[in-house]
Image (tube, rainbow, N blue to C red; front, side, top):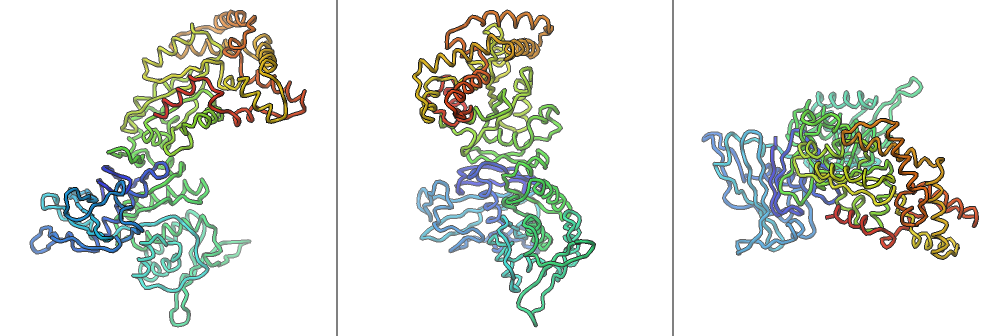
Length: 596
């Protein structure tokens, strides 16, 4: 088993060390390096397996090393148009010249051995060389005796297949073409290892209620190989060619069949995005099946995936967040070390994304519509860019999780995490908001208290609304719009039907609870009434924009506009039209600080 791989100057990685488990799930954004790690493992094991760079002298019981390097026009299983694409930052000065760049791959096994490879390029060709010494081997090495099995995503099966020689079959698999030769794989398995074929059949029957049927090849009468499956329909067992099967079943079959075929010839199986095109339920089932197969066949499985369902299905210690900028990539800690309530909020996927970005953002709203629209307007791309930040909804105003999550999350991810919290002010005065800010600082939380009642209040902007109305052929000047907005906000403050009093009471009581202070409902009601009375006579636009409920204010305003002008403008239209010039500087600064 591989316990660690160290890469230098290999593609996206300048210098990184990855600690691996018997069952490992690599997760990360696009272009984060997940597939690159699989390629590095596959490349090094293929070179070691197919050459005499490192061998075992059985008579002398010592490791032997080839002194000279081995030239390649193309590296095994790794096809690049330009040799420089294989080197970090495309810098590859080959040969023995000063400053020559070498790709270094080091692999540690589970018996104390370290395999060291160096790869250089010169005149468009590659040279692989052993860099290991006797001191790197503590016991008899066996890892190089096994080729890796690399299986890439499903792309569909052909209508028929000609019979392939075993060498040709392995070549197709090395090129990631398992789905093109799935019938050959099944025939080869059925002919060469009946027990393994039976184990595969049982696994398929158990999980899909489908039986592998009529897997045959008759080279004397037919150039094609045949593989059918049987299903029970209307109490009849009917046999169909694999081309009639659903893509989900075929995708899992093209993963499992090669594993069972080569289970005695390989120790390491590499799966690149096995979840592609699978239904979420089948993604979870695939994760469970692969864990079972890895244990039953005594194989090390390393998976690259985007699937939140696979990531959430496995144990935290199996998940490695991949970030090419980090020097050490480790798995999440065991869930037993983390408080149960934290784990309920931060599942494997969220924790791994936090480990990659180094940040977590909590928001008070359950909907992310507002913060995502602001992110697009500012251009920070925090939620749809190349390195997104996980966003979690706080469970109410008295939720203590955002203030307690930092330490257990850092323990879970093994990296430093910054906690950010975007919170509504809910019309509360500084008397109630200042203690929350102090509590956040004491808890190492970057708390941004919206300077307005809630995030929708940021849409109460005369310039934004005027521009949107003009798009709908409604011409109002800024003064006319401001008058209508003031009236709508005054309505929400003065009329109890809009529940401002209840919002203030709830905010006061839960804020005190968050800070560890008990306050009765009657006392909270009294304090809320005092605030509402203070707000009752507000008529200034900025004052009202700060304390009035934004959702209700916009609802009243847009109902007036839509009724008057026979339109159907919504808050959604405002979010879609929002631009950076419409926003307060404070929220822009907050998102930019998150981006840093």
